[in-house]
Length: 237
Ligand code: ATP
Image 1 (cartoon, rainbow, N blue to C red):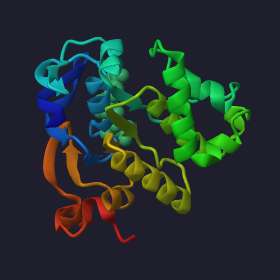
Image 2 (image 1 turned 135 degrees about the vertical axis):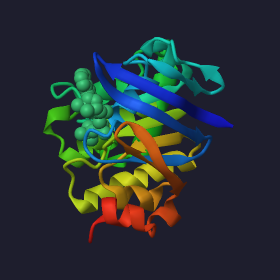
Image 3 (image 1 turned 30 degrees about the vertical axis):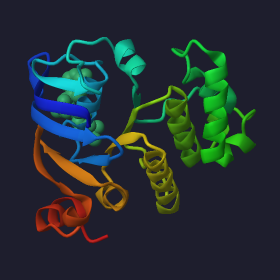
């Protein structure tokens, strides 16, 4: 079943058209990457799914429901969780308090506590630092915390915006490993990445967004050797 489905989505910021025709789908149990250059429209695509920006035309469906006109809290409630670019953790709150905030829409506190325990199992480094202030974590740890906070919301699907940004290659590999474990535990993932090579190693499929429109789509293994991708997004690394 398709978890997330975009059909011919167009979005404007005032007179500026940011999305000119995004069509994509993410199936249950899949990790899908969105690749593309700066300003191509990747973040806007995630913000559209989260109902943070309005559609001009087209449609977005999540878990079988049209969410094109939903409110952001309805989208979170339905289980589509957005981990934004730049981590945005609360630097003066502890690791535990940051995780608890991920469950702010969850009424049952016992459920939140159980999910936090599961996050600690997946990310033991957070368990060791549960009383440490968020702002004193390393960049990679802060990224893990942002992902962990997203998991406490109880996602059916996670959308991650540039989780590798500013991280050393070894840490990027750790983040990617965590993302594939999240998928293995049954949560679909839509991953926005500038680091196409790191993304394609863990994803099942990918789309390229160019100038606000989805252009190339394919299986990650095929795209790693596709000359259009190699030349434009993989460089020599
Ligand atoms: P990056 O990797 O640099 O974040 P991106 O692929 O995520 O790029 P978007 O941030 O979605 O791209 O931006 C798509 C287009 O929309 C760009 O031309 C950008 O300048 C424009 N844009 C984004 N946010 C706004 C905004 N709030 N107001 C006006 N224009 C915006």
